[in-house]
Image (cartoon, rainbow over the protein chains, first blue to last red):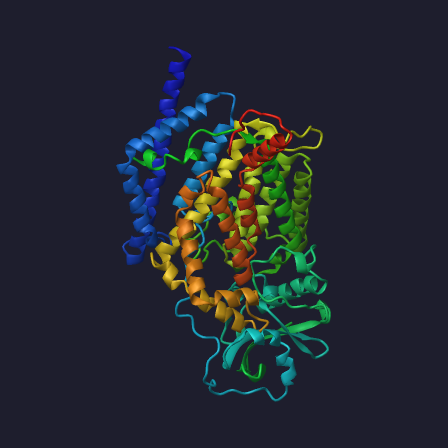
Length: 291
Length: 327
């Protein structure tokens, strides 16, 4: 048997192995949404499987059908890849290229999210998004008599007004930090380090399940930001966090050790587009966490 | 039939010679970006989070089939089923070790070992962040993939201290990392487009209504508690027709990415579109996808650019040269 014949034979075997692997990936890629669908219908119960993957079924069917219909093309491509990988026996990097491509293909086909690859950004829309500014005044607006309205006003950014083109009422939840000197100052959930702090820290019915942990994290991150940046880079030029909250300059605030609690409020403002004015008209406490 | 259809896509064929410079750019870019991120974010606070924030089952919205995402295993989060969770100090030490490794890689000190170390330690920290935060921050995923790519570079593709740099060395071997990164970004964009069809439908661009988001983003900005946005950019994007055109372009180009990115003559234009898309996402949503933007820039055809500069220089000096390969 000549060297070329051995290579040809090896390439053929490698090509078969490659096709077998692709078939396996595509078969599992088809089985996963099918199982997910059955899970959703209650026919089966698999503990590790989510029922949200059923939406991928049409795509998985499309890929499987295309794989079967274009077998000739797949066979020829696998043969070319195998021949290329074996072309220079000393060049191991060709195996790295093939391996990486298979890893990417597998990861996306099975929606694995392995850290170095994920399932792609999900699709979402903003159609039906409610207006932030409502023409009607919300019912039962009130301000707490023991708190100066200026405290709440500090949580507003009036320089946004030139970009607002309608009048009415707008509401938003605002986090306040409480300090030993009796002051309360605005903050936001960026200090809590997570995208969904309410669920992470268990906020429901005015109570926070993990209040001490919440306050510990807020203090930890507040100390960094008060010092000028989230970590070693100055805040103004640091890599933007995925927690895309407004930037607050905490440098004028008391030290982190002075924090004694945090409270969450729903603030309502009245916006007068023509006058360019915004005023606090309501503040309702949602939750309180004490240190 | 497919071969005929993809006839002009010669990128799918045999690799072509690429300059070592292109690999140097990827190496420097990956280490520099990772350094930028790890110097900017403080991961140590994650040690203070409630333990049940890191449990195996993640939010269904983000992890399609698996209740436990793969990163739970690949970033070694599972070890805390057997050992206690680290303290703030321990996480800080891991982050500082990652930073040291990244500095080494950037300055060409044992770059392969530096890339592996930064990948292992950095992915562990990012795994904490993604699981604890219930998010799928795409910029960190792309960053980790770039470190993975650098860790697997062919031996001669690195610039190293103590080794004479040869940025103009031309080899087929240097094509591998470029191809893998292109294939990765290709899959990333295509699946983002596909997810829009799967989650919403083929009419995604009609329902996207980025204009409504932009108006809301501006109005919400009255409060310090809300997400951040660039006011003038959101003001422009609040025009419905403009927002619709942008949504259509994003949707269409993501879906044709598997073909478009592999047309050698067209890919720079597509890559610059995607880089602009990431910039506009930063301006409207404040998500800094700088790693994605940088990946697009890293894939520009540097071999062809250098060849073009060389030809222009030779023409100007009246020297005739043999044709250079185009990448």
